[in-house]
Image (cartoon, rainbow, N blue to C red; front, top):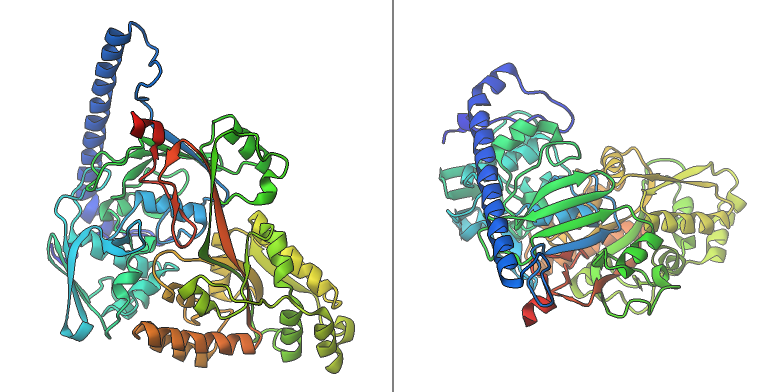
Length: 571
């Protein structure tokens, strides 16, 4: 396939396809639509036939429609309550726990982490590194199909990467070291020249500089391969509520999305690995704590994601059979501010704010102490999952002295400020805890919640100066935190030339040197009172005892594809 055979895509900011582009690819798009309809019709026909056979067989054996005790249930459905918002499952934009959990079930890429947390092949059967680390050749499996039935080829991988750069997705940094990425980002080219489609199942990638962790970055959902023709058909509605159903290559496919209420996945009959035991996963959204527990107690909900002790304070012991999985994860709450904008351009103001913020109070307010205050370096926590022996609990009296010594006692001369946060209950509780701490200094702080998507965009544009939020490991290694939260090229709140220089070296370094450089960058920001880590999350998953195989990723996202009902295993 030549470069001219790749369709163009409209950006999330709304660039429309030109007439010539639409004409050029309409025939291919129509073929894909017909193919999608054919495969879905064929699959539905098979399901109907199987259902009729099973029904007749069941009536013949049992003499009626009742399945009877011990028989295999026809509908192997898991119902999961997601506590975080689900606005966007496009892997290039997914951010919240719920979005990532769902996205990784639908979409997959060249590589992925296995159940033991080890990087493993996915779409790529293997890869070879040559030219001193500057060239990586991926050899793709030839038996992988999108949910719509179309065979996945190397051209889909290349187009997916180009699309991420064209629309300047928040995670486009994954591909920044690929030759030609700068030209695509700057709109000087629509083709990523450093990616060669050698044939349908061979992809060769040329890097500007050797990057030891490049393949690791490809493990996060944002690097999942997408159907390039479907991207053209669906445009800016791809993987969004109200749009057409997107196709990935994951073990499950999207079959229903009732925005704000529920999202349903069905098993992918074309999946290239072992077929999941589950037939359906239904994600229940936006339930109150009370309704979650009522649903769980009634057997209508099987799993509650991120269950906090206070959520069940008046309920523990009611269900006879439940499991509570609890473990520390790479998910941290932090607070950041822009030292270039008033009043934060005053070092005394920054120092007093960070000194006053009580991380223990934030942890209690946000998570009912389900976690640990970060007492050491964030980079060390990421490596070891050890939060350190003592945290920065906050010192109101010391903060008052700092202000008084600079003629700012009781906040005099410091105007009102806005603290932004995501609109989740936990983030708002943390922000209100910070607001209460700073009120003791005489500072007027207004808490302003925003959706994750809107807040991330505002941070990228430098439209907020003071915010708190969480960051979770999405599978791309520690680099992802520094790219998304610290790197001045991808956000405009924390922007230090010295820090950016350290990061550029760190991205290309081997592991030990990488951590040294990232630690230096972290120390500069914390010493300048631009950044403070509050706590690390200990996530808890509440599950009905009948389910086996419940796991979470290092970032706290549920792993559901290997879940099975214990009664089925016994029988």
